[in-house]
Image 1 (cartoon, rainbow, N blue to C red):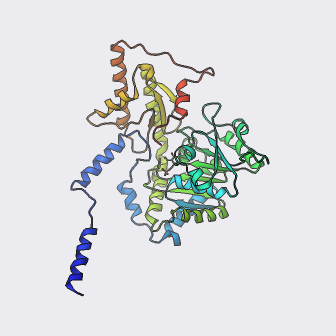
Image 2: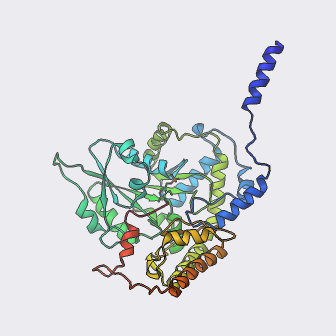
Image 3: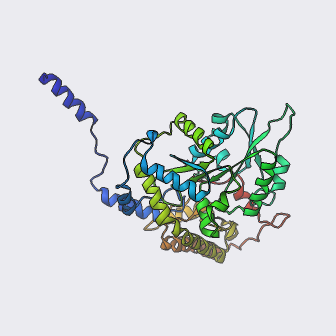
Length: 405
Ligand SMILES: Cc1ncc(COP(=O)(O)O)c(C=O)c1O
């Protein structure tokens, strides 16, 4: 080989190589971890721990497009605990929902009926229209909490009228904004849907929280659905991954769509192992997360803040206007703390890495601002109510005003 070629190769290698770590990588990570423990933005920010990585480092090797042992084992486990025939590991919750719906929808025209606040229509970049060419029939829950069979019956489109777009799938979300969908209402909707030949999908990104809070097994919670998407990367604290479960033939087709969507991955063993670690070690921690969320809510109530969506699992929505304080004032004050708190706005999310101290510090910020306003002469506002007695804030938060997701 000529020395010129050798030199050229060495030059290219020099250009290609990279070290991503800073000189203070360990310190930076410690700070990052500290920030996560003081962030109420989302549970998607939870980070893998050394213990999780240590378990994941022993994962099997293999290319998942040709079937990878740990990933297959995780899929088999997921099928078993959800009571479905088969499961498919998918990189994200968005892709999992979109593949799920694409696999159900075969011959247009067709529509998917869902709550108007659903992730599938609000936060998946219009994927339903793009990937499936489907129309969305968005339902506003008449009770302000969850859609009912009567809400569904009011919006569903059936029949042969060629002007109409028939409902082919009903897609529910549980939890939605951290609230638990009553199981008896899910069963009512599902029995009706199946009677008229409409399929049922669940965005169960946070169904773990329902199982942890109610003690109901996943098999029971998911029995009313033909397909379910579950996420490992949110409340459970895995770095990546979701799972779609359903009938064998359906999952076989979904595997095909996963490839088409660009979601056929290669060495996924460490991802599956991280998810397994999260199921084993983090799922049992969710009741404590919910307890901390309720503590946060109780503190806000005591200060006089309005709760617009109660802490049923890991989220609470609030409105500080009754104490004369704005979201911006809270965000700015929290940001000025020696150890700042990260906040979005009306939504507070608690997760397995939230420190109880962060909750105390947040409440101190809100309490201090309330006292300052009182001293400056602000008289606390009357609680606002709608004609049906629900606070206005409920409608505001449960409407389009959700910030992060
Ligand atoms: C209810 C719900 N479904 C689906 C998703 C999408 O998950 P991903 O961010 O993995 O695409 C999210 C994301 O937070 C979510 O909150």
